[in-house]
Length: 197
Image (cartoon, rainbow, N blue to C red):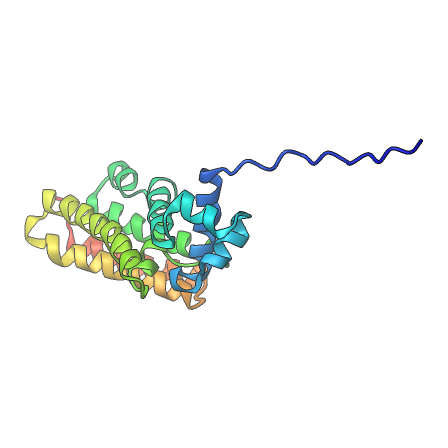
């Protein structure tokens, strides 16, 4: 007597939304929001489109979750750097150097996820990225205003514009060494602009 034994399949892998957000973050950072399709996401996550939409709602909503994760775990730690520095100027200079290093540390995911997201074509995603960018700008401005209220706007603009330039230059392939050198030059300007009171 012959018996056909049908092999039992293993349990399907359980969908992990935290892992999915991590994978999506990598894709968005590598390619930019506009270049990542829902098809790219479902393939990378190993799910079908209905499951994707059930889990995240839309590509834009997933991107918002990615930005939340990035702000909590991957963004430049402004509060920590400024809090640990002996002077505001040195702290802001260190923020720029840290940004330069971070933006070029992974050759497949260069630049700042938030800053690059502020230029995407999708309105919802662009607004989400702009919200995080504006919050960081305001934090920097407030830190400057506490000690140098008359220079808060101009110095905050200088710092944020420099960070945007570092991100864009990293995206265009500039080396970490050159980015750090630029950040250090900008840091020298900050030391002159914000003398210790």
